Image (cartoon, rainbow, N blue to C red; front, side, top):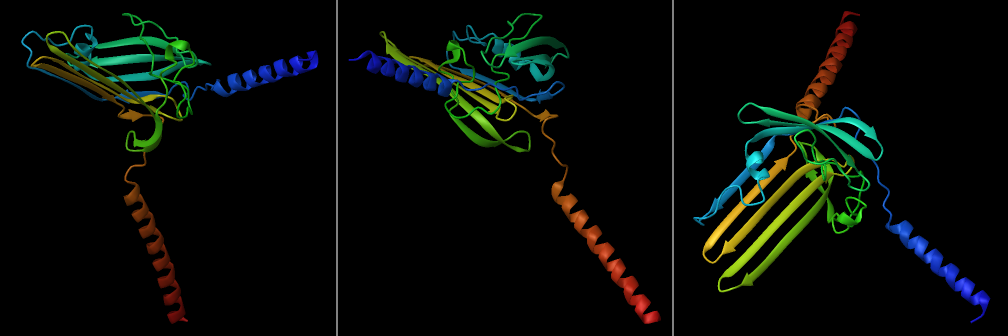
Length: 262
């Protein structure tokens, strides 16, 4: 092969590689604004087991106990330094106490503040706006398998929105003198235009022989300043129509009386 042909081949390969990299690099865009707030007042936790040795919460899932004691949680956007979003996270518990912390998330890489008594882990709380099916929620290798499954229309809260859905499922079974089965599923829903999570649910089934343990958890958004819901829109339309008809009838009546007088 001539040097010219080799050069052309290398150039073509370089261009193809550049096209692949460009195509796979999904632009990341912050979809929230400073001052935006999001309230999650729909929280539910369930647990059931016929295993005499089972305890709640299950091992390694201590956060379930805390979530079970949570009445509501909220997030308010404190600062934006693209691609970083900083929020104040508030949890209000059944005993009347609350916990207020700050946390940040890089909506490009997925890097986040750590979960401590002073800071909140913001992973999955906010992702990039306007992601599409098969886009990863963050660009780092750690999240390479976290891809949007679909964009669907869902109602949050009382308003239909384009919503990005991600489902992740783990399942395995084995037999070692006794049948063991484990299943766990997690569902994430983010508002597509803002990238804010609007619903998260998870559930697990663990069976060892005849012993069965199940648990589930749900968090759903109930209010936000981003969604402006007109109150009683149907009634408003009726009132406007009545006002227009009444005004028209009054004008017609006046014209009729004026004609009769003359």
